[in-house]
Length: 533
Image 1: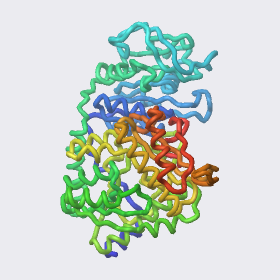
Image 2: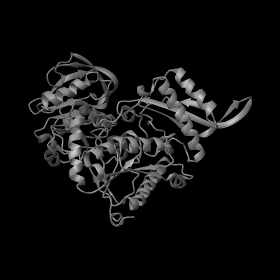
Image 3: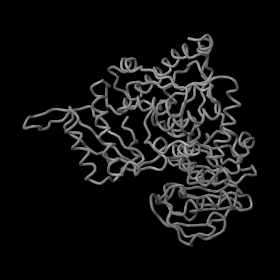
Image 4: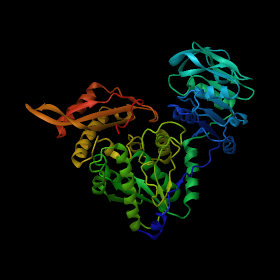
């Protein structure tokens, strides 16, 4: 191991985000809504950069960031509960447009002198509103609109200076506005697809009210990020963790554009990859993209560390720790490195750290986030830490990566370890690889692969009785999972043609020794997650 690496191993890792400062930013204060990330996504789709901040962010910090607008998210709490989240009241004194959504509207109303009561009849799901004022948020929209409600409390008395701009059967104030101070509230959720005109309302807020330009694109991101990476890295060298998936592939090419030969890619075969993946990664990036790529077979080490482990969270942490140890050993032969680059995405950060995204619950620890040891010996560069998956794909398009790489289905950092339910063994991995390969092959043959966000097989922990060749069998059960999604934050199960699912199931049971039953997962996210573990 290099001298520099031994020394750096004694300090905590620093996370470095070289993101160039966007020309304009919308700050989203998260009060725990399941839709907060959707707000951020919708804002970005309109060409304006957005960030999710904690409720305790001060007005002074916000003022220094210079947001073009502030959005207060919804949340499950009641403003009447003593432990309900709140925000710095001085935020409403800033000369910045503010939009409160659901809980955010109730909090704004109460903070500014209005009165909020528990609703006589809570509103959940589809409803319609009557628009009283078609200026502001409702400019260019109809008098009656379908919206998605999800609230118990309601604004009973408006704050001084506000007027009701829409009503619903259960809310005398379904929307409110103080145009002079540019303060607006919506009792419903404009960010969800169930509010058909929600995007137009958000666009009115951004462009007509806040005066945003909407010039944030992936081309501008690449330009700013390349410049930021060059400035951050300087003359130092960077290790890039290659997996062959979309995120790390795009990351490697971005780094290659920014720093060239100072990038060293390292691909670790952890024994948890899909069929043929290790050789495919080496061929694609070493031979065709001409990257500096070192391939390490550490499958035995990972499988030993995972032996007998049931807990998904322990699997993720063990894999993260083992991954870093392998890297630390590798750098002894590759020279000195200051930075380790990872393809961490925004949903990874938000789902893993409730402190980052406000009071939202921690759903699971992601390999690129919570699975890392506290002291790893490198400073971490995470250029995609503020991007969603489809934004990373657009970065890949800007960099000229082939479609087969950019549009490959997402693959979890811990690999097949979280698709083998229960302890991981070589035999289980073999079964799962073969089943997964058959499923993907059938989807490609049917022209369905690009129609779904993600598709894969899962090996369940139990066995099932079956009959094969007139004999009783007791063998493994495989679940097939395919989902449709826009950004991975929410997902619906894919309505694949029965014939395609049937062909995949028949092939798996006939071709994969040790499997005699196949089931299809019809769970959505929420309440489930896309991965099983």
